[in-house]
Amino acid sequence: MMNDKPRGTKLNHCPHCAAKLHIEVPVGDHVPRYVCGSCNTTLYENPKLVVGCVAEFEGRILLCKRAIEPRLGYWTVPAGFMELGETLEQGAARETREEACANVTLGSLLAVVDVPEAGQVHVFYRGTVDGGKYGIGDESLESALYLPEDIPWDDIAFRSVDIALRQFLAQKQAGTEVVHTEIALRNRG
Image 1 (cartoon, one colour):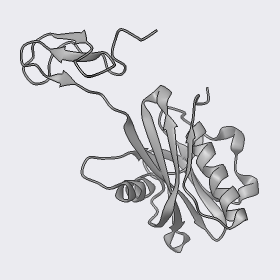
Image 2 (cartoon, rainbow, N blue to C red):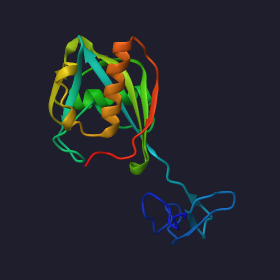
Image 3 (cartoon, rainbow, N blue to C red):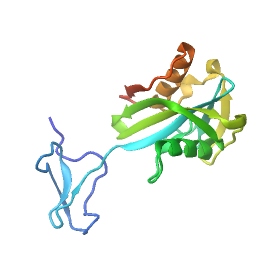
């Protein structure tokens, strides 16, 4: 049974003309959307992109303990929402600088993880921490380089990060570099 309301943000007024919105399935579409009867604008809300980097230095992986919700106090790789006007690579490098005060040399694309419950797509790159230098950014409580066997798996913040880390390690052990795709049907807690 199809939901009779649009997914995502609840809207009341048109952002273009301020008229009251109504809900309908536009001609040629298959899902309900907010539509303005005054200026005939159909509003689409699409998934948001999260970009990140599994960065390593001399066999250790850079992790950050989150200082913000969601998942405050849990570990993650540097990642966050992509900004308008930047490329995927620029976003992944920026997030690494912001969260871990680290410059990275990005490698190949590692994983694309669909997170439909959150309305997001998470994109992860491989990377190397330049000079092994890192710190603690404003959105982090701690940052550390972990040997694979010391990764705090039970305290990883998000399912998508768990997927990216496990793929990185499995591919490194196998000597391969492929783009892994997966759907994270449920995030933790």
